[in-house]
Image (tube, rainbow, N blue to C red; front, side):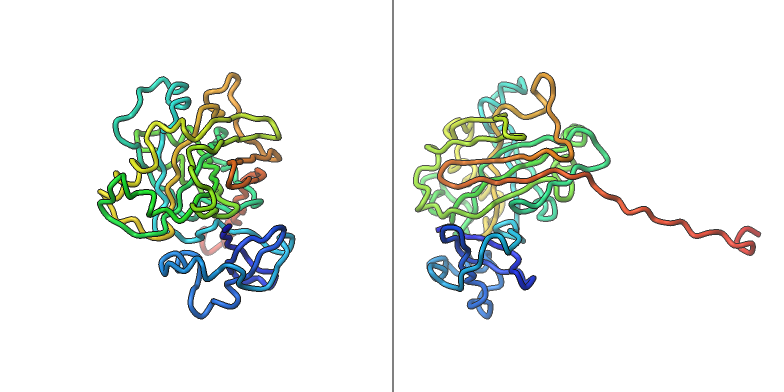
Length: 295
């Protein structure tokens, strides 16, 4: 199944499943039980969505991040051998983990915002794992049982802010700088995720292309490590890292500009597409000083 969150034609947030070129609006009939897909996952009720709801055309909705308000968004850096090589680093012994906030991610076809603070807005095509079953101290052998499904991520990065210190967070958390979606494909439908291929395109040109078997630290290893630290909850997002080919290390460098379009496509899952716009900071008028204020 493909699970999706969206704003309905009536302007209401909802969720459902994808059926061909339509969405089945399961949220409209299940809203008294589930507020969103995170609650559906927590109740282990994915199967209740199958065939539920009236058809809604994709053209009439706005897609949201599949899990609009996850408890955690955990990102693993430097986790493809090709990307490790281009950065000149050694293969890590442990996953390099940082966090993002929900406000930093938008859905499919919603523009990414290039911040005014930097000219170094980079793309990162990634696979994201969506947790379905909660757990702490999960062992590698059972880690895949905790996965609800997979989706695509463009982990947009503001490179100069990323390297201001050794902590990646500032460069990874600008509002609306990344995207996720368009939907979650359930793990049973994808099968062996390591057999899939990730491709990133900028304005139609391939800039990243690799098999998901190039991960330096495997998905079970990530889940085991992270769950040693914190309890993974249904709806939690783990972005698993980006392959080689990011704009920072290309010659010449390739940074995103307004009017460009980025696609992240993973076989067996789908394609995430977003345009780029500039950040707009409203001008704030300063009050005019009166004679009394001036003195």
